Amino acid sequence: VQLQASGGGLVQAGGSLRLSCAASGNIFSINVVGWYRQAPGKERELVATITTGGSTNYADSVKGRFTISRDNAKNMVDLQMNSLKPEDTAVYYCNADIATTGFYRHYWGQGTLVTVSS
Image (cartoon, rainbow, N blue to C red; front, side):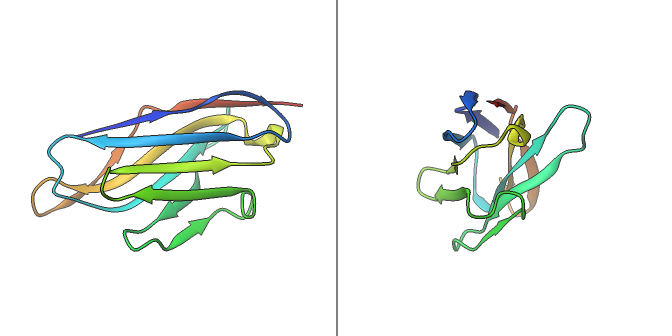
């Protein structure tokens, strides 16, 4: 199983970016998926998660600006990021609970860098 993240880049403050993450491999089922980020010198933190049924959870710092969505048929999850701030600069990682047989385990994508200039 692999998670491939894409969509990072350099953007000015106030701009938007859309991150995508695609899961591939011998996938039986995907449960909760989410995005995390890690800024230089800081610990990795939760950005947003979404369940199979579409229930979402956001960090307070991104509420109202970021939107997480998923396409269960395509095994993909997106993160639409609007009104970006310099403090959103980080490496963003997708994460998913994936079952290849009967048991779920966590998988991480490789990370994609988002840089927001002031």
